[in-house]
Every structure is written in structure tokens, then in C-alpha cells.
Amino acid sequence: MKITIEIKRFNPEKEKKSYYQKYKVDADPNDRLLDILMVIKRRIDPSLSFRKSCGHGVCGSDAMVINGKEGLACKTLVKKVADKEGAYIRIEPLRTLPVQRDLMVDQKKFFKNYRKVKPFFINEKEVSEKERMQSPQERKKIDQATKCILCVSCYSACPVIQKENPMYIGPASIVQAARFIDDSRDNGFDQRLPELDSPDGVWSCKNYFFCTQVCPRDIQVTKIINMTKKKIKDFNN
Image (cartoon, rainbow, N blue to C red; front, side, top):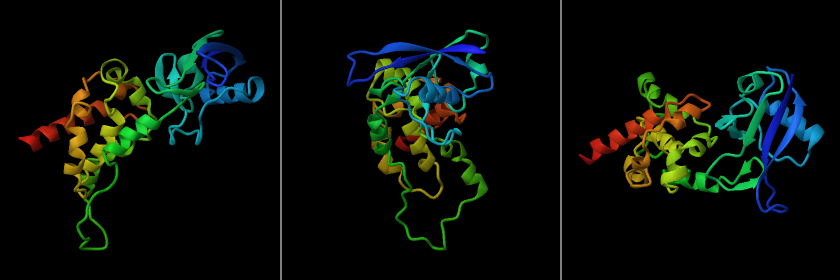
């Protein structure tokens, strides 16, 4: 079927403001949106810029706003966003981060916040055996958080960052902190606490649930944030 892809374009080297450009293409309902973008890039307009890597929903590099909602181009089928002949699909870059060019955004702020929560294993005690043991039940507690691929979708979709507190460290950072806080082998809770237990930390979250809705890995992001809030409250009491 024939569809129209409307893409928000911006090249800071040539333009002062963004604009929308339309491309009419042939598409199969089972095509991935990433496939369509590659057709445009290779056959119609080589100036179009976007990120991609694995193409299988693992790297998270091709996150963008598709018909008003964050998603991965490689996991979005045409039939999910264009249900009839002549349908429009509008594609825009992720929100709240500076646009570098077209669908590419500058992620420096996102990763700066990510690093603040010390997203790595902390345990300075000597290992008594060959490795630090963990039961299946203990491992299950961090299963959800380990699925995060840092695609930035939740950060882009968050109304708090968009309208209320742009300094909020964001859902993904808290999920990454929880991945280690809830790890039975980790001892770094007190080192992560200053960033989490602050106005720009977990307390900025207002439970809008947008982060959970757009997560391509089906992580219960809001639940993890609320569980982290409870852990901080219990610690402070």
C-alpha cells in the first residue's frame, strides 16, 4: 500500500528552525518502520539522518516519536501505525533533548544523569569463594531492571521533564539505580542515596505512567520508581 511518511527535519548547519517533510512510499503492512526509513535514506533522500544499529530492539538507538508516542523504529510495524491506504505516519525526534540533526538527539544530559546514580556494581568486601553467590529468588528481584536498553524513550515521554522539572534525573536512571540497589550482592545504596533522595531524584516522579507505557522492553518503570521511594523511606525511618 502507499503511505506518506512525514518527518520532522532540522539541520543546524543550514536551517534556523525545524520543518516537516513528506515522503510517499510503498509499504507492506508487515514492514518495520526502520525498513521504510532505510528506503527513504537509500533511494529518495540520502540527507535524512537517524540512528540505528542492531535493528532488533536490543541497542535502543533508533528510538523516536512515532505518531506522538515514543517507540523503536525497528520494533514498530507499519500496520500498527498506518491502518489503510494513503495513511500518514508522523515521525519526530525524541523530546526534551537538543536535536543534532533530523531524528538524532544529543544524549549527553541523559547519560550525565545516568552516571549520577553510579550504575555499576559496588562491593568492596573480599570474595570468600570464587564468586558472590545469589539465589534464583534474589536474581528475580532485579530481572525487570536488567532489561533496560537505555533507549531514552521513557526520558523523552516523561511529563515531569517536559513541563515541571527539567532537572529530574529521569525514569531510566532510577531503574538503573534500582537494578543495583536491589541486587543482593551490592553494597552501594548509601552512595547512590544523595542523588535519589533529592528533589531532582525519585521525589520528582508524579506517577504519570508514560514511562511504563512507552518502554519497548515492557519494564514496569513506575512500579520500580515507587519501590525505590519506599526503600528510601524505610531507610530514613
